[in-house]
Length: 150
Length: 150
DNA sequence: GTGAAATATTAGCCCAGTCTAACTTTATGC
DNA sequence: GCATAAAGTTAGACTGGGCTAATATTTCAC
Ligand SMILES: [Mn+2]
Ligand SMILES: [Mn+2]
Ligand SMILES: [Mn+2]
Ligand SMILES: [Mn+2]
Image 1 (tube, chains in turn red, brown, blue, green):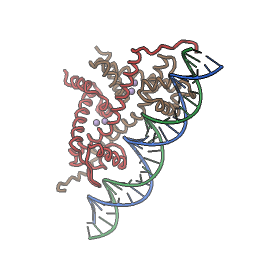
Image 2: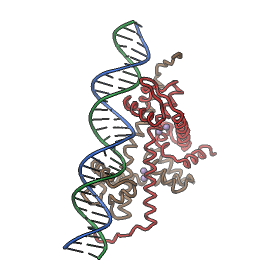
Image 3: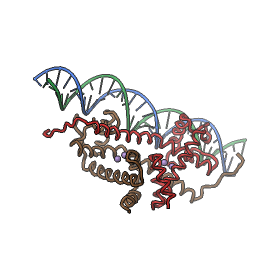
Image 4: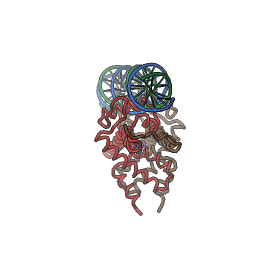
């Protein structure tokens, strides 16, 4: 090892490192809510479309197997987002409904934003499904303005 | 149960269900590559900044502990993205370098797009770190045009 | 050169989220 | 009403990605 690379971590560099770590932390936090968000949004959808949210319909639309849905719903129930009775459809709690509404709204804005940008509907729907979970309030506001703007 | 809700799944509805499932599948696929993408991008960064990519520096910037980095690097090595020797810095394979370059490019475009939209740099960096993994080629193109456009 | 500090690894734990196989319960058609 | 089909659940396995505690190795200051 020839070159002297011992730049003793200036406060400025230290701050940059920390800030980067916080960004990654934030993304990891967001990741932990993704599945719950998609489920409550879908459950709200199904209750409108079909009058009830059955695990089998959730499974078909999420593209996963029924046991996966069962386990996920148990976690959602544990976290106070849904209520559940054996062999019956699932229902959203107040908290679940609130989260679903928030997610529906955010999904809608992200989708309309991508469409306005010129994306085809199929791709827009797919990208929105992923992007929605990583959009801050500030960004959402800007998306909204862009959609509404001339 | 009074109302008759037995709408026998028309082909149109079936296609809609399937398409939605595909969107979720796509998002799940993207999620599986997120960590690998962030790591190779960061490793490439460190090799430029510091001349080498040490686990301790990766850990600090990712905001995780060294054992987490070790385990992740082992997965990356298994997947042919990095090479590794005990107690030494890590290196990217050809494949790893290619992926890193792709990720760096995509990250850059998403970031510039958010900045152009009017987002503050701190939030832009954080949102970009999450959004980048869920942006299709088509969307990236549109972002690029928007950034370059008058 | 040696000892202490820094770095890296290993072992072992945890939880989320996926699956298949087997079983139970409910809904449906006759 | 009953047989069977559909739906739901349970058990058990697996991977990814996080952690702490303990250990091993390397680096550095003297
Ligand atoms: Mn989604
Ligand atoms: Mn959604
Ligand atoms: Mn990222
Ligand atoms: Mn990135």
